[in-house]
Length: 194
Image (tube, rainbow, N blue to C red):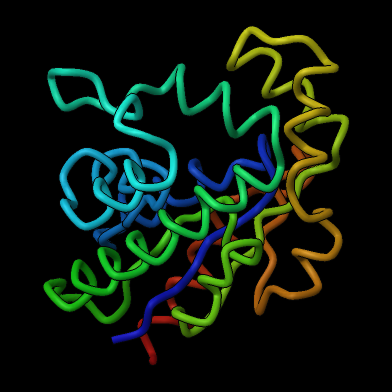
C-alpha cells in the first residue's frame, strides 16, 4: 500500500483536497489533528514533554496546557524546534501504525510541515497543494478571523511554497483558476494503479 503525503502552505487548501480524497473512499490521516490527540494519550510523549517543558505542561485533568506551551515556543524558536523534535517522531510512529491497519490501495497523510518535519521520508509520494500567497492570506483571514500581519507571520514560519512545490511529486493548483476535483480524480486514478 502506498502512503501519499499532502502538504502546502497555510490557506493553500490541503485539507479541502484531503476531504475530496476521503469522499472517494480513501483513508486520510491528519497529522495536525493526530498530534493534538497523541500529546494527551501517548505516555512516552507526555513524559518527554514534561521532562523538557516542566510538569506545568499538563493541567490537572491531563489535558495539554496549550497556553503555557504556546508562551514558551512562540517566543523562542529553539523551544519550538525542540517541541517539534519531540512531537514529530511520535506522530510519524502513529501514522505508520494507522496506515498498517487500512485496507485500500493507498492512504493519504495530510501534514502542513511535511518537509519541515522530515516526514516526507515516510511517504511514497508527496502532493503539494498550491495557491498564490495573496489568496492564501485572504482565506486564512476569513477562516480564522485574524489580521493580514498575523497570517504573514504564520506563512513565514513555513518553508516557502515554491520550494515545497518543487520538492513535491505532484502539484494540485487551488488558485480559483483551475478546477480542483478533476486534478484529484486524475491522481486518484494514478494511485489506484499502484
